[in-house]
Amino acid sequence: MKNYSKNKISEKRDFLKKLSEPLKIRVKLGQISSINQGVLNIYRKEGHQNLKTIAQWNRLGMVVKKGEKALLLWATPLKKKNENEETGEITNFEYFPICYLFSEKQVENSNKTNKN
Figure 1 (spheres, rainbow, N blue to C red):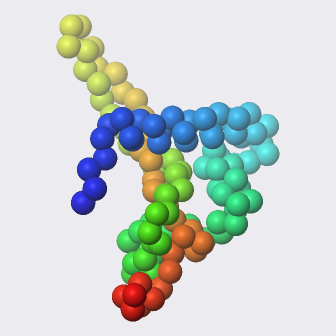
Figure 2 (tube, one colour):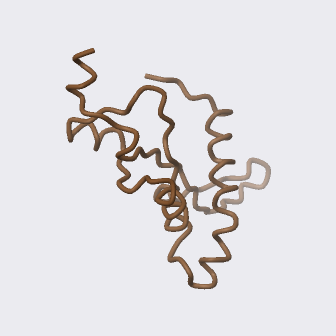
């Protein structure tokens, strides 16, 4: 299993934040339903229509092509508690993890890779 450093995850979060920033206005104006909807629209313009996780593609007998990079979306937010060590004050907040997806353009039949 690949070990992702905090730095690499931070870079991916920063990329997704930059992609998401201009979409906030479109959500407020009611042009799109969510930031993720806007990100999906960007991916669709690049030809990525059907997005799934690696596990979902694998269940369909597909594997991700070598060298492909995941398409990023915001995952379902998690509720977290943070306790201030000095004051003992507890703060509740939402944390948005990243969801790693691949499209039909990035996968191939697993039988095809086994023949090589």
